[in-house]
Length: 359
Image (cartoon, rainbow, N blue to C red; front, side, top):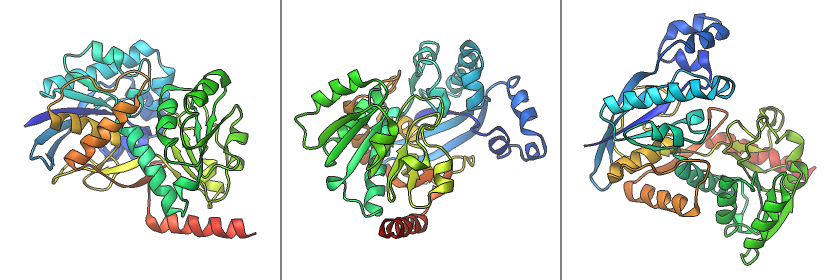
């Protein structure tokens, strides 16, 4: 039996902690968040029933790190590291041989390198499979919106970054036009030059508004602190996949534009009769891509620190896609701002876009 663990944390202090402790609903959010600073990490649940198509089996544990995204970004980094490392040590004590870093635990600081250096087990951020499912999801969502990727204009916001570069290097073979969007034009020019022999027409934009004006598919992976994609930037019928944390897409987009589909990567169906022992807001037997990467590495018996730091290579993305196919992890749906996106919702957005374009 292979063994893994996954570190999770509350994205919203009151909402998420009340899933484990219902009485928290009665407390002010500010009090809940204040109290989290004084709470230690803890085992949340035992995960059973992960069974690969190969016959390999795995069990795991969710370990909670009691800090919100705001706290992780505002508290001293040493304090945050100590909390995450303490959660990782609980994973070790539970006999896990690899631990995945969920949500902001993979974003803060140096992308897991310090965490890995202070643990005796393997560590992964899960970002390789996150990128794989984000691109797969963006292309699938585009088709559901009746956009043909091979004829589409795609834009990568934050293309100068390591993950943005990887997304660009993969998307350039899937679309007709690729727009590289970012503040620093020199690295974007270098990237555009390296992609000049590919099938897509590649261009560079230093302004988000200009780069997204006619984009059918947008992949957002910038490192901006605040939202940089707003309702007025997007065309009717566009698909936006926001992989960035903090988010690149303003919540105003889904509130004000009912003709645009915003997703945050994919929901992954986990093989076997999996029981997570905890409701983290997903449908039964499904998980985040970062969770799934941790499980896949465990099922492979590859107890090595796989995706660390701020870089993700094309090779890593493709290897995780291959492992997903081998072990029968599949894209099972979409989410947007922590809520599921149904096929019925997509149909409504598609109809709204057609009406808007007909005006």
